Image 1 (cartoon, rainbow, N blue to C red):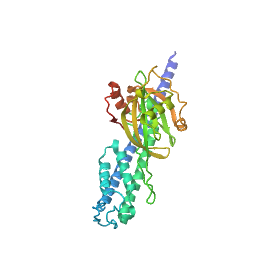
Image 2 (image 1 turned 90 degrees about the vertical axis):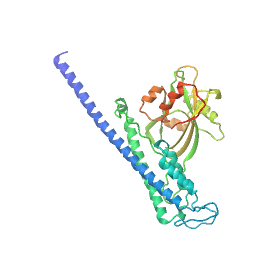
Image 3 (image 1 turned 30 degrees about the horizontal axis):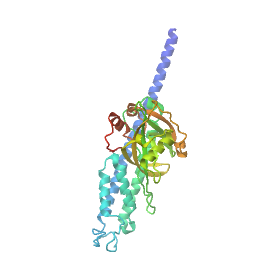
Image 4 (image 1 turned 180 degrees about the vertical axis):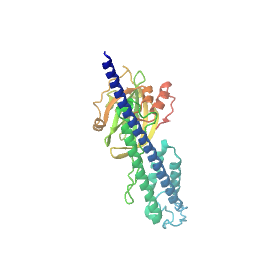
Length: 357
């Protein structure tokens, strides 16, 4: 190689490194701005949720102190009601306690607490409230709705950028954890009812091969196809179906593997989550069973039994080690899977159902 050729190669490499470095710097800065935007969005959402809780406590405070007891000691601004009835349509003690609980709950359990408060506010007879208090409640709910959408938009943009392969390969997100959506019931307007979340019990299966690798499916919400996530095998429990029977059926449909009830260990975990999917809101109660698949290290996964929805939303599947899960920046549900799985693999199940999020 001549000196001229060598210098040309070195120059080309330097140019490529300079371009890659410049691009990486731009993307890293953009990611940083998106994370700042997400943090600011959460701060605004938390403030709006706090304001709603304050107004909810104010509503509970003006409820009749003797509601349901035959003693009507209701101060203004709640309008008069028949003795022995609750003019608000909701127990004021429950409303007050739910508001306090929503404010005190940590981020991991906030969705559940806020949804409970939202349901109680949805049962409220607002015609019994004074105009100023009713207007203040509507304003607080609208601020929550707006703040939640702004925050979730920021989460969407952040996750979309983090999901790009070059960003993952170069680890441009650094050690920042991926943000999570905040899904709660919304009250669309003063005259519109609360869109209640649909309760959905689910049986999910931690399917392991003989190398303790876990089977996960990559999926997405049809309304947000660019944002993929990984989840375990399993799905909703059908009407009059036992939990174990649902787990066996789901594994058969999604993998082709035929299990027996004796192979199901657990349920070992329980997860409660509210989430949006294809325009609907679900209040999901998930029960996780542990199964060690017999035979080869990676059983053949037959997806021919997929439902129409699964065929539209599932992108693929993969067997994961606990170490791979811990190192991955992909979105995985449950979010504590990488934390809880090693504990489950380290020893025999002790019979205790643990709560996971």
